[in-house]
Picture 1: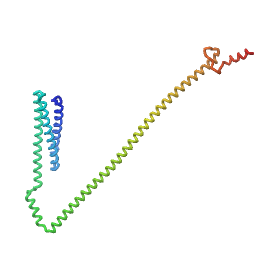
Picture 2 (picture 1 turned 90 degrees about the vertical axis):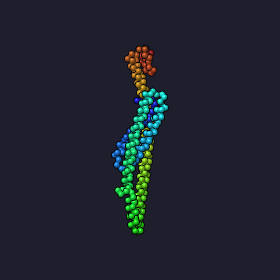
Picture 3 (picture 1 turned 45 degrees about the horizontal axis):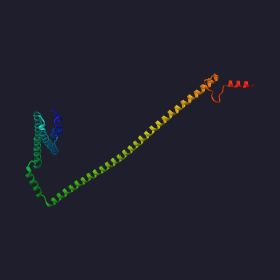
Picture 4 (picture 1 turned 60 degrees about the horizontal axis):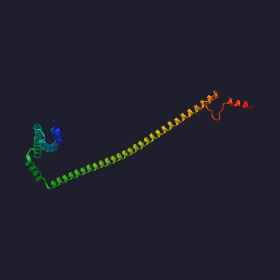
Length: 262
């Protein structure tokens, strides 16, 4: 059944609940592989939080189903209620599993603190041990514990100082990398500007070269035309269809005029 055809809100809630149930399944599988009690406890707390979220989402799903009940057919309402019951049943199975793990962890804690002889025997042993010591032994033991505490504090201080130094070095490295990145960005901007400027100059030079070529072609055509006219005039000086070029008269005609004058 596609819940998006009924309500987008129901489809969204169904997806969220499915994701949490899948996370619970993976979480409990991971919990089985953990041997340390403290890690088991933290994992169990995380899973408990997910179960709370799942319970809240199922309640929202139920409320949305009731709001859509009047607009849906009886068959659709039946399917939605069955889906809700399936969600509740699956969540309850994980709740029971959580209780089982919590009981096991609680028993481990009791065994850890009580010891083989029980809690009372452990306390009595400590009392007897302290009462059997002299005042000087008690003082020495106290001084030793204080020295150990001071050493632990000094180690903690050293760890904190090392952490601060590492943080400062990391911050300096990040600052240097940030400045380097800024320089690289500025250089890239300059290169981009230079490329745009060079492209513009190339286009202008191309236009100038094209213009110069056109002018040269026109001049060449004019020169060819003049040469052609000169050749025609020299070959056929009596051709009246071609006007004389100023300053260039047929030689034969000039000689004839001079001869007539005589």
